[in-house]
Image (cartoon, rainbow, N blue to C red; front, side, top):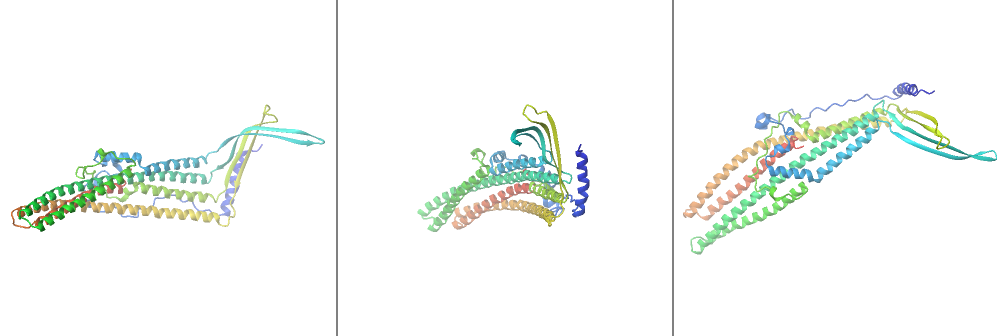
Length: 465
């Protein structure tokens, strides 16, 4: 009787040394994470802000980062409706299915088989019918993965699945940032619109008063014309901000993926609590927790697994085909038990360099993935550095701008007093009013930039996944 185990062992013992002798098989390459291609830290603790020793961004959930309840509600609405995030989630399910398909290749597939044959056989001057029926179970071409080919392909599929998961996390991080930025921009434009309307009311009142004074000979036509210039300028600003608000609303609705209830929209920027302060951390290793960096690393591991699969091509491929069942000459006479066992080995000897080329191509894919991984880290390092630099400068700019606005308010007040007393022309009031209005607009812009900077720093450090 044939002994399958002994026969299979003989195949392996004979073919493996022969394959190693006939082909120079490359050594197994183990994965090692590339060293960080950036400095160990960004700057001194003072440059990173007072929160440098606080909880790192990846450890802060976005619900904890945003202090404004309405903003949290809008982000939550976006996470449930945004189409890009939905597509990323479906991509995960597809990658998971592909991984399961590849993982099945490591296990035998058993099929039930039923066959029947009826044939007419000539016998002298006559003939007779020959009938043969069989029912059984069989294993078709199950590859014995002695050299890791199927395992490497399974690892590649797993890394692709994990990379897809991180891609979804990166999409969520970007979505949280984009929704927050659009929300803050809408708040700033609403505050600018309110400022423009208040300015128009004040300038309209001044214009009416100056025109009445001109009618009784106190003011000149020049004063009236200058006052009217301010009124029309404020009206133009109102129209501009009304148009921008419509665009802001459309942008926010697109990100959310559904209409945003009016009660969730901000009235102004001042009323939104500032996001939670962040600690950047002194070590650039925090970047390794960013979803896009993790995605690049999983892709790199996938290409590393491809090298293992290409290396396995230098070894014999051994597959088993077998079955067992009942055989008979009639459907009601399936009494005879039978089995078959057919091991098959494919020995690579000469292929004109195809395996060498495939192995080299797999190595080059891995090297390109290393370059992409390192570039992703360098880009992330710059993003964090830029936002940290902005944070320090924006804090100083906001304090200086607030002081400037207070000083210009005093100047405007004094100019009106001197004009009412007849000591100056209306031009001095006009100049002071324009300067104050521009300074208040700039203060809103700086407050918006500072709030957006905190959200951008949170995103750059990998928060929001």
